[in-house]
Length: 112
Image 1 (tube, one colour):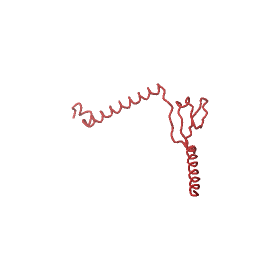
Image 2: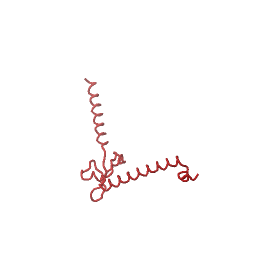
Image 3: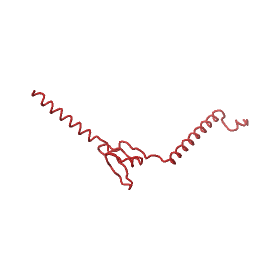
Image 4: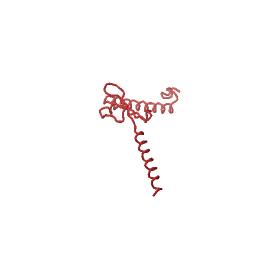
């Protein structure tokens, strides 16, 4: 019976320490409110999530950054940019193919 009491005290100490670590290991969030003031809190109100935020560790270092939600105009611009980039890549591939087949423009017209 005497052996059980120290073990129970040890177990209670370990459990309380891990509970404290869990509480202190919770992430903090950094975001800007509607007035533009930076706020650090253990939670983010839903009205600020779409504006983007950073996740901080318990030491205040940034773990991850969640960007703001893109507007429809920004999404359209991104799609347009992707389309133009893909078109440029296709044209560059065709140019490389032509340069492989013909060394100079004169070869195309038969002036060699």
